[in-house]
Each structure stands twice: as structure tokens, then as C-alpha cells.
Image 1 (spheres, rainbow, N blue to C red):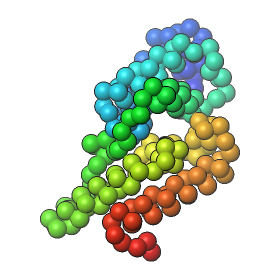
Image 2: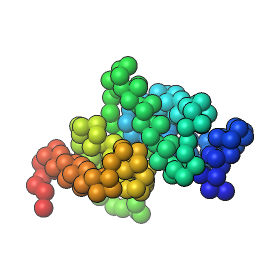
Image 3: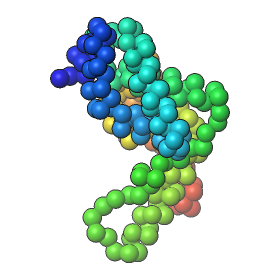
Amino acid sequence: MQDELVMREVREGDVAKLEVLFDRHYAGVLRYFQYLTSNRTLSEDLAQEVFFRILKYRHTYRPDANFRAWLYQIARNVHAGQMSKQKPEVALPEEAREIRGTAVPPDREFQKKQEAMILRRALAAMPGEKREVLIMSRFLDLKYEEIASVLECEVGTVKQRVYRAMRDLSDRFFALSGERAS
């Protein structure tokens, strides 16, 4: 069953159906917060808060709206509320820190780990709005249309922000690695 149909049932009072949405989306929401906060415990608390708010504000869901976009808009609001309370550290969570691939020689494996560390540092040094758009587009695989709905802007604006964020990340990566961008 599509998320939008399930959410429509939750909105109409069948709150037990929220479990279906929780099962489908909790891991993604948790990853979103881990990328933003680098704190597993805090991320779990924030993810739980998102689903609590879905239940609490289910009457505000528009049946014609994209559920994932609405979900990440709530997640974004939860994160903004947390940010106003404290300034968390920013880094990639542990499971995202390694660049994975097929069997590689030990020297190449070392180089990959070094590159992953530099990439993590470069991403952590980026301004929050650029980091957020990269997390949504590259790590959570949200479509540009969904990101536009979350950020309340046009798809073209999202594309431009992703492009600029990728360019910024590349510049930071090469500056930290001591190499020149091609």
C-alpha cells in the first residue's frame, strides 16, 4: 500500500496504521538525523519525535501531498527545534564513514580510508543548509521534487543548491587533501 494511502487512513483515525509508516521510514529518518548531528542517541530521540508529531498533527496532512516530503518537513522542523536548544557536532555517522567496494589492495584501501576521512571533514565544515541539501539528495536519495517540497522552494532552486553544495564540498575536499580540483 502506498504511503499516501496509509497516511490518509492514519489521518482518518486508524492510528494503528502509523506502525506501517514507522517500519518503512524510521531507518531513513534516523540516518537523516545521524548525518546532521553525528549523535546516535540524540538521533534516535529526534526520530521518535518525528513519528510522535505525525500522530499529533495527522489532521494537517493533505491527502494529495507526497508523504515522504511531508515526513522530512517534519524532521527538518524537529531538527531546527533541537538546533535552537544546542549546537551539535556535525560529522558523518560511523556506518557512512567507509567507502565500500570490491576487494582492493591494502594500499588502495588505506587511500580510500584517508579520502573518506577528508570527505567527512569537508562535509562537516560546510554550512548547515548546504550540508542538509546534500544529505537529502545524496545520502537519503530524496527526489528533487521531494526536497523542493521539504524546503518549500522550486525544483530548479533545489538543483542549483545541490550543484553549489557539491562544488563547495569538492573545493573543501581538495583544499583539505592538498590537491587541486580538476
